[in-house]
Image (tube, helix red, strand yellow):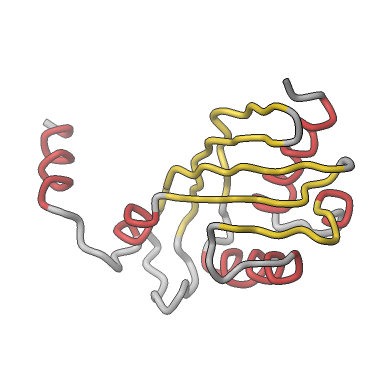
Length: 150
């Protein structure tokens, strides 16, 4: 079971760093040897913060994370969330579309000494890039959406 301090740390990571783009207390949230896995171009703390402040923040300035499930044991925490934002700037070569995008994410955080030392993060990249218009939707997806509207 998570302690109150661990819950606050996870909330701060999602609220301050990911949602607000506020890195002022990042040294109190992320360990100096912080690493992230699952996003191939990101590895250490500095790279992670740089990408958060430029690539994501510039493309999706209103990016938010809605946490649905947060649970953990010992030194690991699992979070199921929805990441949302409007595509307002170039993202990985994709011109701004003004599309509202929302995608499910799963994040596992490893905690040590009141800081996050490691993050594994996965998201539904297919849906993300379809919502950005970079990949066409499959026929079954279009049919399902049409049926749901009727």
